[in-house]
Length: 150
Image 1 (cartoon, rainbow, N blue to C red):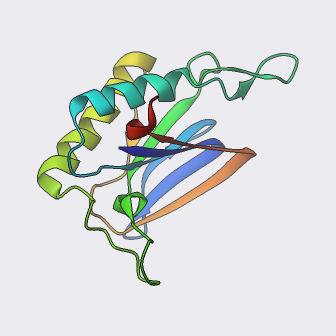
Image 2: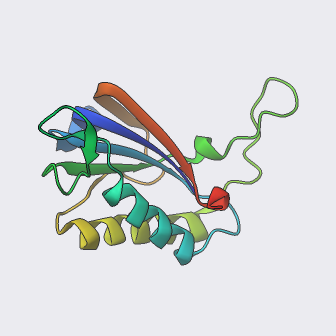
């Protein structure tokens, strides 16, 4: 699994012109699920995500997690994070998980983040045409891949 985590001052998801989810300050997390990913990948990433110290403390040093900062999490599935760009100019998504694996792992990731943070994780809708808006605070953007743990 691969995450793109962005520290935001606000973020939202619109579907069909209607507001679906919104958060104020916190984390906007894009979630990509690969074939072969497991619940262990989702668990590990959820723990890293909620504990990542990318919020400023009282001295301005990035030393606080989303939990410490009282922030929210908005998680959106994004299969394009699984793109292979090795050949040509058209990305290949052959390694992206199909719905039967990707949906349960995305939902499991969200539930793990919710349990660890003691807050509801806001979401998009898997497979929907979403309009995602955010204000990246910092900017701070972190990419984490569960296959690169070591």
